[in-house]
Figure (cartoon, rainbow, N blue to C red):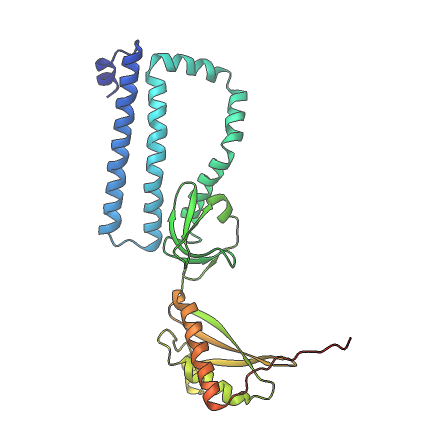
Length: 284
């Protein structure tokens, strides 16, 4: 291709060099589009595993960068005006390399971190992950520079790969989609604890996402499907917690809301005492 292009263009003139550059850029762009299109078709048609799909998506995002890089390198090495100056610059490139390396440190760290994410697979596209209380959602894409997380408000969190690769990540779906949900309830200080426990257990097993995660031995021993414990007793309320197993981590918040509503309605109907705040009145 090099001989054909150089034959078509006079690389000793400005217009010839300009035309040559435009052709190489167009070919690089076209090649990038074709390869990315093929990768997308592979993702759609093949039944790849979640990890395999993540690797293919990352490779698709890498194609544009590397083809562009090789296109620029090809132009510099094949155009005499550029190659002669490049060799002159690179002959004393010690300081220049240090400057470029320092300037590109963040970009390179993101690139390497993205490759490590795909290689070691702490999370994948489609996983439900949590970094902290504000950074939580579904991994939508992993690019060369950043990871895109779609939170539950349909907003995108753009997190640099170098940041997310060094943070502690809570992955709800990396191996097992079953999650143990903690559901907290407050009762009045004189409430019937046994009745409250029974109501919470009955309302929990009615929800469609709640599963029976007991072992056969626990079933034979008649261990309750939902464990409800008294966590603490305060001066104005009793703190109880229900440990509920779910088969769908994406529905945990919705399930919590449904359970709290159902339990509260049952408490009102069956007369379970609710907490009454205690206020201290200071005499002046």
